[in-house]
Image (cartoon, rainbow, N blue to C red; front, side):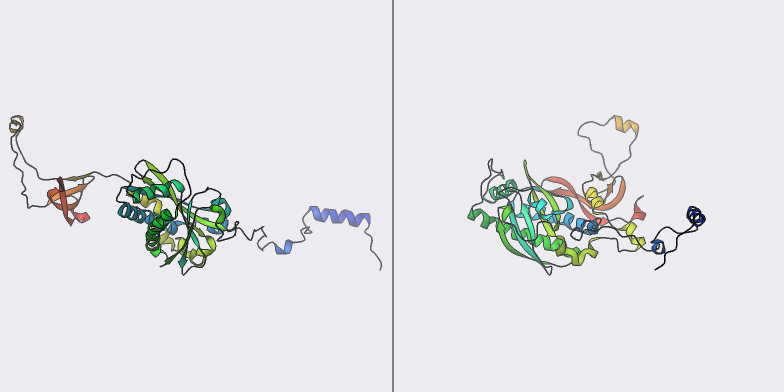
Length: 328
């Protein structure tokens, strides 16, 4: 096979053409229009889940209020339960947060496949147990293993807590929880592979001077069939701007407003005002059966009837005022 050797003039002409851009030196130049390949870890689902929590956060915010009602009814005491946040972690990293004893409760959520966890930290476990046995809810100074009696009593409360989870999940899809078992040692939890990702929702439960944490841990593969329902991203552009933000709703629920009820008014001269003494009576323009205006931040919102409720002065709402009547 003969070989063609370039002359010096041909080599210089080739270099010149390459410098001027007349010859494409990129062997893949014909594929510039195609997307560039990027490395991807098959076991990593982190990128899939970013920003997919809007509806799920709303579900767990609602669940925190249902949980508060359940604990108040079962324990006959004041409880304050708040939803903290939702995060994505590997299952083994989640379990590493807990020591023995911790109350791990495995349950399933039909029609989803697989198992989830309801986790109650040790101090909160003993605080709840103390309340159910008539105590003040003080946790133990030194934690110990759970007794069989304590676990049976706690299981009854957990069944009620899971029923509330069903109600909260109605926003996404009707589910049915099925309780499986309770375990106190994190080393014995083997429901999924250690490197699988889980979606963890955290709650804080405050009881008098004591507080503890409760977690709902669900494998990503378990909720993957409804992942499109976990975000507002598939809504139309017009609806995205008006979609409710659960964080904003949570802030609004804790916002204080001034509410005032005007029982009536009277007109008097300056002379009459200066002569008022203790015990004098000012005659108002309304009677006991006339609805009084109720204002929120000085804006008329309701009409109501004044009275007494459990020994306290109160106003019973009788009518909701339309916006056009705010200037009445």
